[in-house]
Image (cartoon, rainbow, N blue to C red):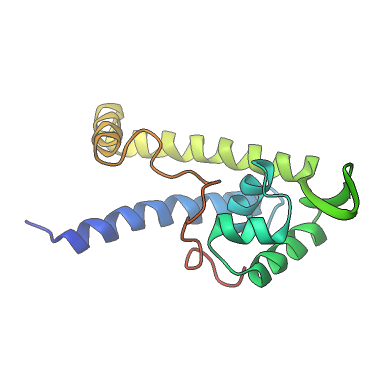
Length: 159
């Protein structure tokens, strides 16, 4: 059966969504029921240097207001903190807290477990072939989570 290019794009998106949803559910089972994919992207961007809402908005391709709301949620949950800038006492910088780093580490471990599940379902050779083909098609680093322009607006409900 031949599929269209749109079908391929939807299958790839479905694969991402399947992994992201399973990881979100597993994080919830492990006590982090309030973490969403966009929170992971935001914490990664902050850890990579987006130390204010304006920069975070640019990196996530969302408005400064949406980024500020995400920061407020992450701060309320203890994943991100604001601290005084050592070079400018008037400025507050964002940083990922130890709890935020722990959530990121657990998320990475869960994705490794999900990869193992996929390997068990389709076999190690088939998964290796899939990864090789995807690497050929999109490159070895297809998405930089800290890069400007990552389209996150539709990956989650409200930021």
